[in-house]
Image 1 (cartoon, rainbow, N blue to C red):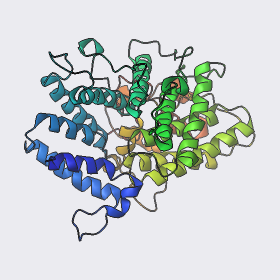
Image 2: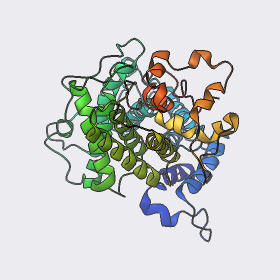
Image 3: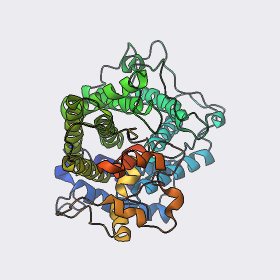
Length: 432
């Protein structure tokens, strides 16, 4: 006797899997819908049902809300997803899932549900640019650990990478040194997986877990907002290699088979941001051409993911705009910019990208959904708000690159560095 709302929440997530595309009907004789149409219809019904309190079992509500947090559509999609997880965490704390209770069996379903929420909390802090909701000092149950006789499962690896991400997030807190990243002792993916892996952990699942790992590796690199990055830093080298691995996993190794979890388009967006950063900081024409080719390849992959992910479609458009601006430059001899070249910061890609459609009427820009979309003049958006003065990008970033036509692209790819800030706080395109 399964809750109909939990079933629909499972469908909400599963519908983004490619193998589900031929079966996306709301009624037996109804037309096949696109993943985003199908999910939007399911999602609207779930929101109303939970708001009206139609699901009476609290644990089922927690599970349903957690699954709903994996869906994002439209300009408020990322905020709504984060809010669903917040509600799930709030209700989990209300029933004491975070506490060690008498007679509780380690590894039971309620404990597993709690640690699922814990990992999703880290994922949303990463993608959504939000502070984590769980404070580890308030958790009364032990973190999952591996026993010597226990082969590592997919969730064991997912949890270990989430734990790694939790440490990376600490580099982005307001009180941290924003010029310091994780330089030494960053574990390899093989070290995280360990020597004993479950036999049923298939190739695609391993590829997805490695994709998540490399997204975290990209975020582990931090450096000054201005000036060319220090290529001698181990975190910078790691970042470049991780961007390559992400592209390889999505494009060839696990093409068409990656699970429908938002880390996939987010990781690819990070890879695209690294490519843009490398183009802006390269000294050699061969390096800049290689970076530009990588940027274009990431755009193509994001466009393919756009059938399921609103964020992927919007970020592909941003990448295309960057390529359009690059192609329009009269480079003459290769003169690399000294502009800020940090890749997109954790947490900013999803909200900023999905804000495009709602911001368009306010800013009077061409719609992202238009077939004749001519690439927006981002500089016009600086006049969008009369109260925007305190939100303008730092002058020292803009002064060094304003002459080559890529200043606004640099802002979009480079100035979202602090996870403690709202994700669209500085965005000159989507700021109302």
